[in-house]
Length: 343
Ligand code: WQD
Image 1: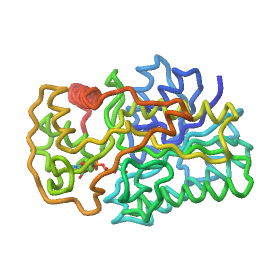
Image 2 (image 1 turned 180 degrees about the vertical axis):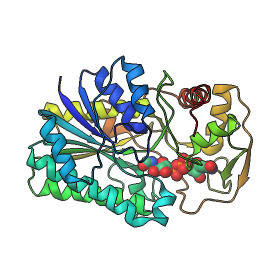
Image 3 (image 1 turned 60 degrees about the vertical axis):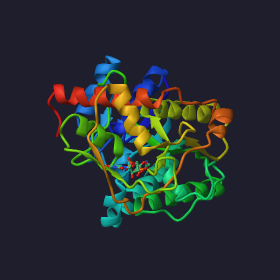
């Protein structure tokens, strides 16, 4: 089996990708410093797969520690790099923490990859690089703009680093996947999103409100230029997103990929916040307690993906509906309650 190193592999998208890699016949090796996830993710992966996945507990900004893993794990065929902080608001308050971790970890990883002649990388990028797009839906040719936050800027800088590396003639071939809004959880409800503290993101706030952990959801603004006044996003089921990483690794290992390629990973459909809430209520039968509040500074009014390139060149399309994603998020929330492990 081909060995794939998955940095941040105990995290939300990472853990779901580890499951899909095994099911596709790969041998994932996790690297995680557990700064933004918990050990129980490894147990959830093991429960789904019926076996444990090797995990090295190191920080990806530590090149020496990375080197030790590459020395120990011989024959790494490729790397999927998830390890990064992703809280937009926190990045505004603590920019250096974000530049050090998100940019520093990529540079350290690339240097060690070059040393060990590991030359296939899937990079976790984000639709935040598009800023507030002038046209919708966004394609991979939509201009990348000044990011709305240090977090978004780290993704933009990392894409520039990878582009410069490709131009330099490095042997490293990269596929950068620009995620839209990942939501939901594995259908087994054994792994899912583990927001530490009060959730920033919409869907965990919805499920925690429905579970009575939060009193009510505040919808940030209903005076946008959209069908119901609330913001539009492209909500993509995390399992679909995980499968896109397997397709990207397949493409890199087949030798078909250029030095660097970018793909949007979304559903190609935009939904408003209110539509997302209504989808949750339909999918679960739960009535959600919410109110309309003021806009959240920095929010992009509308963004959703044109997925033509991924469909045509990766042969990848999402399959889950918004309702299915919401139901899976609710089942995961119930699993957390029942195992009373909610933090
Ligand atoms: C979605 C919508 C809010 C919370 C996230 C990540 C970003 C990137 C894309 C990975 C917005 C509204 C939210 C709430 C609300 N992912 N909302 N009440 O801001 O699109 O960005 O996904 O790179 O890193 O942060 O996601 O879930 O925070 O917000 O009304 O309590 O829900 O205004 O319109 P966002 P989000």
